[in-house]
Length: 292
Image (tube, rainbow, N blue to C red; front, top):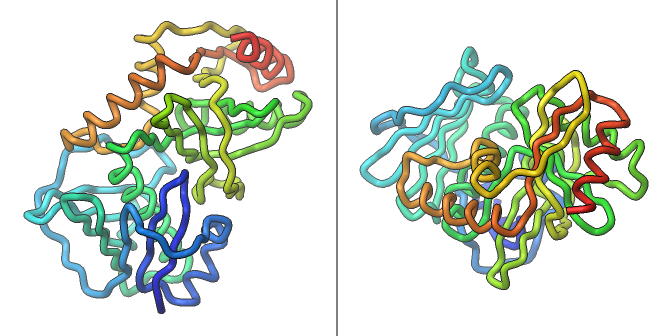
């Protein structure tokens, strides 16, 4: 076992202690492998972590989502990870107060699939924590690239984000999928806003080391007809915030997310799309966002 390095949304991250079996099973990580460089955080896979600390009050996960419980400790934070609220914990993550170092321990009964589940969740959590103050946002979103720009579709689980993306792929010429669940958005120092593919794409295997400027962000709602409306800055912020991963009970992270979201909605047009799962919805959306 030795140190592995990955480049995700322009940030280098390191993993220590990954065995060959786990690395071989984590095919989603392969496109992001890179050479050794100074990492923004290091995740070490270890044995024998013990849960401690005070459990933080967090919203219950949506049906079908992972169950993550966060505990504040004297050294930082600990996170338990289970496939769902009614499933046993499969991994334990310990994070220091700087979010630069994490330790991941698998439960003794964790098979390869459970180890992959815990590893991916630990990486997403640590990435979201560490980059929250670095101008990055981890979104729950599906992203289509068209004409060199990324169009992000947000919504609650089951709303139809992936379905709407498939309508673009089928009916809007030149469309391609960048990510179907967890893209990363960055507001860069020069003021540009870009969306990046990531190793995490939900049930759709789309792991692309690619990034493009953000063209627009669209929140999708199911409706009996197709209608789209552009939002002002205040309503854009309200529309986006629930789709951003982060731990807002930690003040520094909440401030970082707020600052980046505020910049984002000032630079990128945001919309609400009430729609059916059909071709017309894709065409209505395409015409509006390309004209923004």
